Image 1 (cartoon, chains in turn brown, yellow):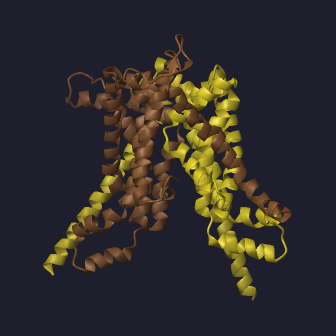
Image 2 (cartoon, chains in turn cyan, purple):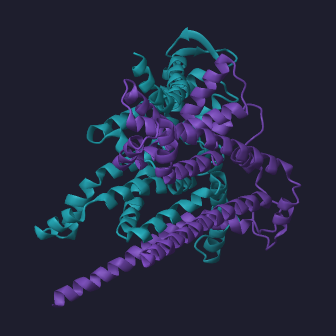
Image 3 (cartoon, one colour):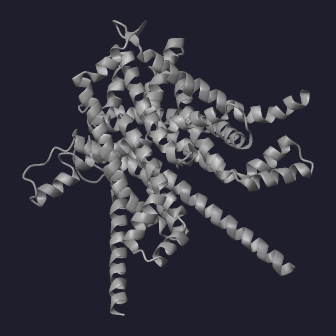
Length: 286
Length: 283
């Protein structure tokens, strides 16, 4: 008995802290937020502990539902753009010799060392009324008057796209890089041309990477509030902003909780789909 | 013959096209950085338009007159350093342990580790906020730190798990066979053998923490703002050039650190090679 306890000590020392941390600060808060989402809102904010599905009915209210639908549309656009532009870039990097490829990956990450808020601010400066883009457009007489880019869904899309692209490129890069050359050669030997090989061999075999990219761009894009706060000027509302507002001035905790649960459910659904054909641990996140 | 020639030409055209595409994409990534640096030299009170070149923002920055900015930076740095220390220790232990041991809740813990990585940060931040307020924990540096560690630890665990392979176990067994105990083996064999992984876990934790807005904003209460949160709130009134100057100095420091790291590594490798050559010459 004593011997068994001794052999458990290193295990406890190593897995104990992380397990306790995850249960305390991930599992419990998430269970609690699900619980709160089924409670009633207090008259002056906060929660009244009485069962109610009011928050979920509020989400279906047209006013909120349009916001949810718009957030979906923007997140979907971002994801599609990231796949469309990210896959060729990932392919390009993966076909370079290892030394060069790792340098290219490094170059991809360096902009992310600058403060994220400042990067968003820089996009605002770039597109503002007296900014470089409008200067060029008006001087080339493409437009008569400077264009108001700020606080539009369009600029929010640019911000999301440039913020998410590396997280789409990295998993796709590593799955293209892992692709065995012999398989491609076999495909050529068996008479397939470049196009056929790409669509019948490369693309299906790199699908786990593509799905990782979808998860790592779609979900954060759906839940963002900083990009929309900065580039949308707080005038364009998305799910993330509405959740945040429920814990600031507006204070409807159950509604904020219900919207958070909605995001959780969507995440769980995507992960479930992913787990059908790959292990969660194959998700390339770093 | 002619056909292969044409294909070669087509191949070359394609590769030029691919290069152009990559250059365009990288340009897109560096536009915000370039704009940020350019506007740190802008001679305007607020960055609404370009008014000519100046270095006065750097002068203002290093006269330390803007204490709000420096306070926020110091606060961010303190939190980032603490979060890095905690996350690296917990994450490295956890990464090794989750790889090595089998226990009943392992599958569940593995799943929980992926939650902060995948679920939108705002969800976890709000969930923590509610539970902290309900049990009456005061918001401040402690709660921000907990928030940061909660998303840094999973990244550290995943990084470490990726670096451990069968070789490590062989080395550990050899060490135990040679008479080292578990603790000695852990500190003198296991840890050194995954040092690169530990370094990248720490680096990742630091960058994630110093750049975080969502947790820092939601869990700060009425306390001091971190730098990113300060920038988010200043943005409404238009940022002045000293913020651009500060972030330019920060990225310059990061890039300099990276180059230095590479230089040292290269020098160390060259030194090792020379030593090896010397050995073999002697032999």
